[in-house]
Length: 97
Image (cartoon, rainbow, N blue to C red):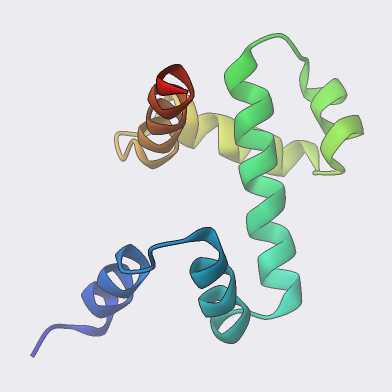
């Protein structure tokens, strides 16, 4: 049997639409957790533009400077690459359109 962490990650890879992901996360997470995830993703996208200061990002997103710093660290310095991978996929998808 797979450990629970792998099961969750595999489950997150199964939805075939944004609506399916939304329904799954709505069941899985509290409204506050979903807001936090959405905020971090917005911060990630704003940081990836490399045109805004942390203060400007805070004004646009409402995120704390601590959250912005954490997202920036994971986007730019940490080896996991999750933010970078999704940003690249989005960029490739937009080029195909």
